[in-house]
Image (cartoon, rainbow, N blue to C red; front, side):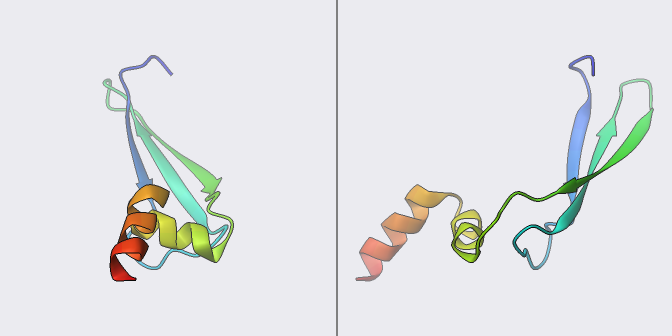
Length: 67
């Protein structure tokens, strides 16, 4: 890794599940492409909710406003 690569994470576009498999695609400036299988470290259903809300703080704020 030289620092000028572009990274794309595939497998989180639709339904996210705790500890699902995803793919990291690394594209180099020279046109090279590498796919790396990864384990998504969203480990619990509540972490899925945090992710969907943009993080824990937006989640908590929405919960407070809904109360």
